[in-house]
Image (cartoon, rainbow, N blue to C red; front, side, top):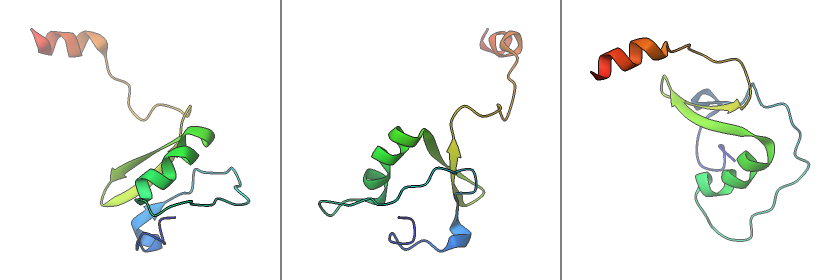
Length: 77
């Protein structure tokens, strides 16, 4: 899908996606984001932009960062 939208492989990362989709049809012309949304909901992944690359990340993995709630609340006062 990313290639169909004109992206080169260096511009996106799908390395954490392991589910296989044997076929996926598009019934109408739509944006890449709209086309990927049903797949994201069915296979539990999100897309994020980081370091000028679109990364597709599986949900439910280890957290990337732990945020201390106490520190966050102190900053709000």
